[in-house]
Length: 510
Image (tube, rainbow, N blue to C red):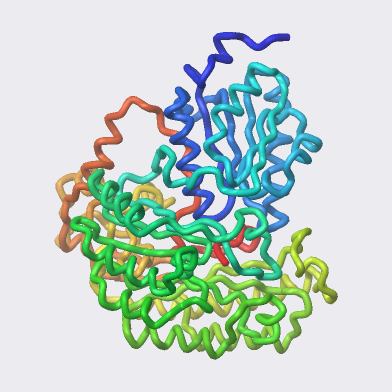
């Protein structure tokens, strides 16, 4: 039966959409581009609680759990698709790049499959699927258009992702990302700085520079010091208050980058640097081109140059062949490093990676037991590090979505300069409300507070707001409230902060 011509209008006119994102920060940023493409093609974000005309999955392929999440979600949509054949379902991202047409074999009700290199093709693929009344699969092997040149619908009015590169030149044995996103391609510095300047003009106060290995930026045009230069150049952009980056690779971490972090006022004192393992033997099996001593020396350099820096990491537990001695090496590094937080992951065997073919795949119960020991240790260290903040004054960029319990506790939430999450009372120290508390203090504004309590994954400031600065970013956030476009579901992943680690989540970085 042909589709209803009103429901299947060309170029998305009158159709609503929802983008569901799995995976890393690069996927979150890609989803902003996907949303922007759909906006300019005539689609509108679906109202909260309503059923959209189009559902787009932007997928991850790092862990087996990512496969289960996608195919489970697609199975749940099958009855909805049968009841409404005009509903379109599109699958993109790393898992689409990996599984390709196999997705249609497992979920034949999917309308469009597109990969990591051709985001810009999505609107035309949706049109073709509607008019041809058959599924469209388009996977390219090389980058078609750098994502940052595409339209965007940003989730935040005050903080923005800025991709400086895509792809990866490393060959880590546990990681499938290089095969799916290709070799590293770098943007030119001038193009990046123009994008950041434009974002600041729109009210953005904080940007996070993104790359699979962000500090190898410049390899594509032959300048190994390019990343440090880029950080310093960000310091010259008027109105840009906070600069972060994720995630650097220890092997490419130079003293010049540490110097740039320390000497550039708006580069924030936090560093997220994946460890993956503290065992030199396992690092060798992972093809991670650094060793324990090198990793700890970088941390020492950062702490010497930036004593207030909060350092976080990623760790994989249960890599094939990991012995109890290897695991103890990891625990030793965790103790020595004093991480403010860690994203800890149980090793997941991924077909197509060299590690999947290694002997000595560990039993799940061994991995689970080690994982639990690591989490207990890291929580103890995180609590100790957070307790050192008691009595300190912190400047917070107020956030919209970081405090899940804010409404019930009467608090608001924000990120300190070192990226620690702080829940605070929007009152004066006297107990008086700050001109209506939440109504006056807006996401994007900056407040200073004194830390009164600590937990492993957040800080509390119940002594009231010491100062409150209304900002252009707060104005931009407030301006969004008066737009007529319905609010779309928020993407759950944000900055690599100091949150509760998720054992079954996707790896955040390399």
